[in-house]
Image 1 (cartoon, chains in turn cyan, red):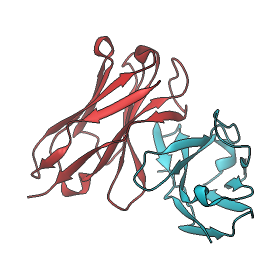
Image 2 (tube, each protein chain N blue to C red; image 1 turned 180 degrees about the horizontal axis):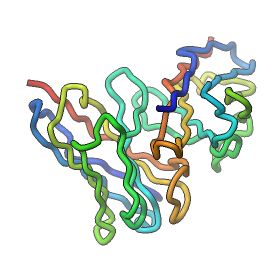
Image 3 (cartoon, rainbow over the protein chains, first blue to last red; image 1 turned 45 degrees about the horizontal axis):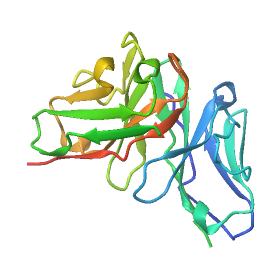
Length: 108
Length: 123
């Protein structure tokens, strides 16, 4: 089965840039979606189809996807960005959705 | 305003059954695929099952295949998850979620999620 690997945690100072990676075999050939989940809340879609942002998501959120790594980038990080972030792809070979293990973003 | 409200969770003994429901409003329910995603306490998200708008295409995670059945009633704007032969490892918060695009079959992100219903499987 297809596996997505994320770092368990990423720390960043306020105002700096956070980068959260999502590794998978030839993930660049798939569309990657990213979700933010604050404690006790439902996940929120923040990036879809590698780099599109739903309405209401700040432009500070962006993403890229190439080779074996997809990356969610959060610019000018704020305290309110502190949350868990998950990447997701559709594995057409198995007809399964796959989530990464999640990354806890800590704002120092 | 899109709303998804799950219900039906609770404490159940191993081997027993439970049926979850998700009441949808604020969008044309029968135009969209729907999903169940779960999250064990302190753990990450795990996809459980997907059903297309017309119920023709259905998929399950390997961990629940043969035990769980997803269904929908478009006339009632409702999504269901029948869970049989429950195991302790099925203990989780179960979310229903909506696909982003109309009449999509696969690969479409989940743009709205409910707040979840908690299932605890324990003797």
